[in-house]
Image (cartoon, rainbow, N blue to C red; front, side, top):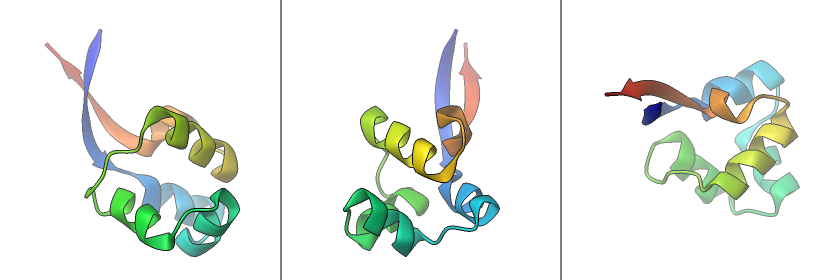
Length: 71
């Protein structure tokens, strides 16, 4: 089944984990602006980065975006 990406849910996952965008950026050696670009849907996370983010905040990769079945 194909899926279409909805909005990024990174901010919600960060709040659930108690981690800030700045601390996530520090942990992954990113500029905070890059994390904020993901949060604000200015950039789509590449899979490799999404996996690292999910591992860092303790969630499933699929929980980082709204997913809609594509027909």
